[in-house]
Length: 480
Image 1 (tube, rainbow, N blue to C red):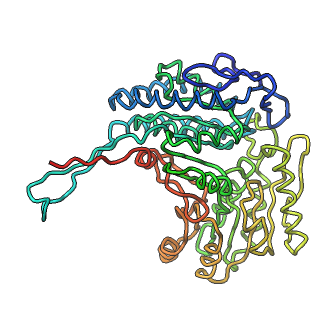
Image 2 (image 1 turned 60 degrees about the horizontal axis):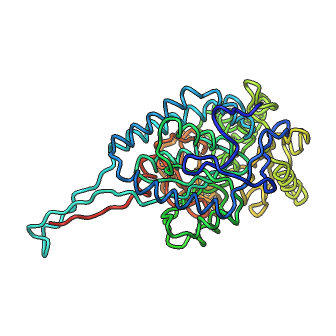
Image 3 (image 1 turned 90 degrees about the vertical axis):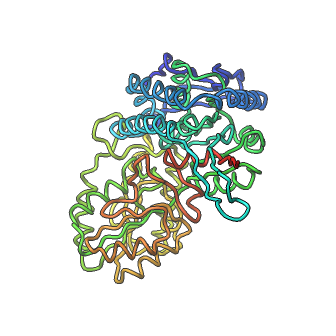
């Protein structure tokens, strides 16, 4: 795919300008399927990062004074612009992210919804009446209004280069905050295309800055107290490390997991098998709420495994550009090798491979959809986030026991439960230590308006437009 020069320049975007002068410090962005270089981007140096910080502060000072109607209108213009350029963004996501074409289309459609939601919520940002008709408060009236927190540092991952960036940018714009977006170095072009679109629709200079930089330069933003919030989506290890360095900033972390799903004997086994196969292997499992651990009632275990394998065999593996592909490339060779090493480690200490368990294409970084059983909780494929097309499956004897097994994980993002017993639904909702429980669906379910986030090592705070706006604003009290 050729770079769309009409929607972006391959440099950092700061104060509505394309910035980047280095001819030595260069990022090469590859097509994730054929490994060809599709763009080269100069890394921003320390002075350029400081330029982004100072312009984000200036951008906030002006943009925070915009009316809610003005903020709404900017978001609607971005939405309309994205709608007109959908195909260009889809091509970028497929090329630099290796995302299957149908899934990339779905990501752009979801992004349009996020922008629409943000435009609506911009008109609904409100405070509350504070009751104080007692003691010293007798005869007083009090209420709060929400004010924007300040410039936001947003760090987004490779797997949803548009939608997860917009889950930070759109609420910030709706609230009245400026944003410095640091996208994944695997998929920076989509973020730069978004910046170019924002400039064309008239978003004021300095309100959105996109900085392509290495970790050392990014730390300058992380530790600068003039930036008031960090919103990070990525791995648990990186996220908690960033939090420890963020100083006085408000921090929201959307991190990873090893999502579990339970299949009860009362469920529709055919539907469960198809849904869980897709939930395990879509986009080669490179979704933080991909199914990784499957627990099936012992009485239907063999039936489920047979139907699960059949459903998996029907999933198309190959080029993300081909319609119908579900499983495409792993994001890079290092992750491909890591996934395979984890599977080999599990096999060496007793895990049984039911299918898959091998690299399907070194040339295209494709790992075969894989299912293992007879696993142990301390195996990496069980206890850590695989972020690949690998799942484990085990028999369940007692429902309360499998709840305890799931909870022993250090993660707690989302879980799924296939059942037609209301008692199990209630028990699981009461006892599972997760941010969300999906009934008769996979953990990968997400609607962009819902509060999304995890507990334990899976994160801190919630995304979803309205919930992100609460974090990006502060209540200011008036008493008279």
